[in-house]
Length: 510
Image 1 (cartoon, rainbow, N blue to C red):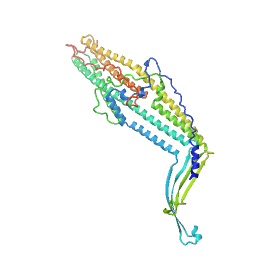
Image 2: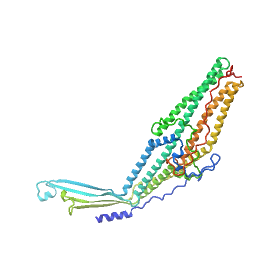
Image 3: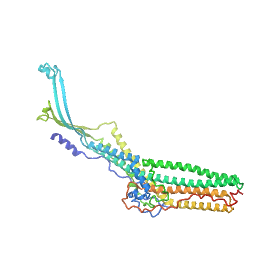
Image 4: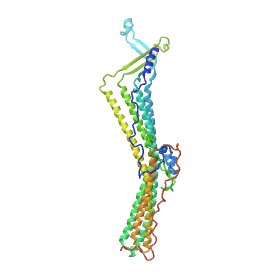
């Protein structure tokens, strides 16, 4: 037994070296700081804590928090991502197992019959066939490769990095899911508001149309004014169907993210002016935070795996040693097993020296090196994509506030124009066509205002996502102050037109 173990232990002492190149993280192909200028907010606080903020602290609306919790439990994409992690871990364990000998035990029973004229029976003059029986029990290992040059160790390292990359991909999937649920929720709220605005506007415009129709019948207005009023009614009716459809589709999209129907008892009074997300997420100037994003970390893990595969490809150029050994007992009957003198053993070392492989080893090494360069490009592209997404989100945060204030002022101006045109009509100064035009402009401005509110909140959600937020439920760093985004009052639908002054209706043009 000592004769068997000595060469095995000697081979183990030689094993462990690796031919994989020393890993060096590529330099980030982006500026060290995020862009600055008129599109970006100045005086930004440190960016480093965003990925440490839990979504429970960032999102303020209880209904949205409830939806995110449901999605994290039921979303199928997230479930697949978790299973991919488990599958990659299993593959790593299987690959790592090749570092160790696979020891097994076998029991056997061999029966054989030799004819009279063959073997010992022919020499001894036996007249009947010879029957032999051999019982045996033995254990050992077969074709265990001694990892002298780190081939198996490099493959195990590559499998481990792949498993870690899948874990980072799972994190990225959850971050994306949290942001997607929030964005889908905002879309539902926006379509609800647009639908309610359209219903109120349609009611107002139908009343205007009926009054205009009465004045045309009375001869105090023209068919042109009537048709102008009708176009406003039909436009509102078309928009009513449009927003009804969009609301249903938005709810379906949200249900897909949740993995179940949207809860029927979800609060209906929430709108885009309600506190939904904190008003100020920390966002500094250093782009180094992007190296902590899960998708960037996953790309780096894949690069490390490709680097390890180079080591495995290099090791194929060197000799490999495989050992087969067994030890046991055998006898002509069960009772003779484990008796003195019944021991059997075998030891078969084998060395394989690659002399000519037809260029296969070199091709495999070239492929491993090319894949390494591919993963470098993928890693750099992941950083560039992260930089672009973050810069876009910072530009959105720096400009949406001014745009929203300007849009609110525009909507207020159209509301005042509508009020004045209605007053001038009642005073007999203007015709009713001016009232209809003002009403149409106000409705369009209010639609744009709702859409802009939704886009601004969505940009804040996106900023949270691109900076790596959404993986944690509760904050590790100091949570942000729960102040909602500063917003303008909820827009109101045009008021229904008042009754025409006594003896007056919409006046003909000219």
